[in-house]
Length: 246
Image (cartoon, rainbow, N blue to C red):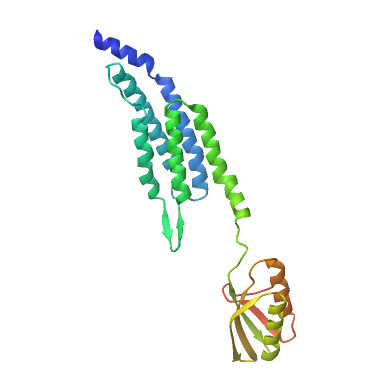
């Protein structure tokens, strides 16, 4: 009879079956939405991974709540958030698997952060804080989409590295004078300039560094002047290996 009373008390204070289903459904929803965005952008962790992380965190939170009510009736001071705290730590190891290093750049940090954030949303859903989970999901989605666009606009590079060009000309002296004059007029730094004789004329290779400030217009004027010069036969971008129509 004593244990039956304890069991009835636990069932009356812990979430019921429908409440558990609702919490799990909310956790799966936030994992689905965030995971779909990551899947769409071809990130290392996609839809199923995010759903599983959110679902697992939710189940752990519900389990912690049930354990708390169970042992508190027996006189123990259980902490319902202890299991959830371990989830936040453990997800860090999962996120580390999505981080890739390619040369000097590191990729996957945002996906690792999204996994950690989805786990936090799963914990919120597991404790029944639906509004917190849903609004948190919206915040994450805005960060991954709108703020990515804003980042590209605000942080796009204004300085382009020096590119190598190959100029074919019939008059080497006139070509060099044109390059030097236009470089001075448009504030262009010419590097690694080399000339060699080829069949039917000469070939000049050089690197052009345009620095900052009105980059597009200065490039346009610089190359237009070289292309329109009477001694110019062709001008190519060495990296792209196509004729530059600048």
